[in-house]
Length: 97
Image (cartoon, rainbow, N blue to C red):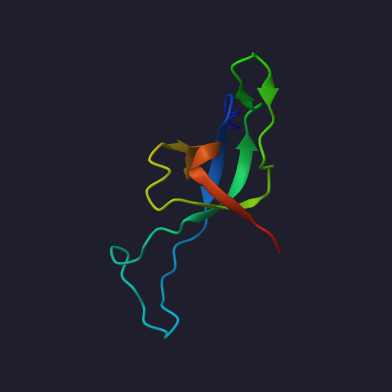
């Protein structure tokens, strides 16, 4: 099943949680923080401006994005996978390789 977000919304798959620290200490599930990075799965058509025109979004499918720690409270479960639904304003930036 696919989801097509509306307007300035973006569907993101959160990156996997880190289960070990840089020093090699294994973290239990409750202690591991959820990552604030993810891959864009789908994007809406754009933000509707006051004059009625549509401004295209600055992110594209496949981009790796950084979002706020408390962003992504809106989640959806599709085919057993938890996806985040974010507004474009919730995204801080795009990571480039």
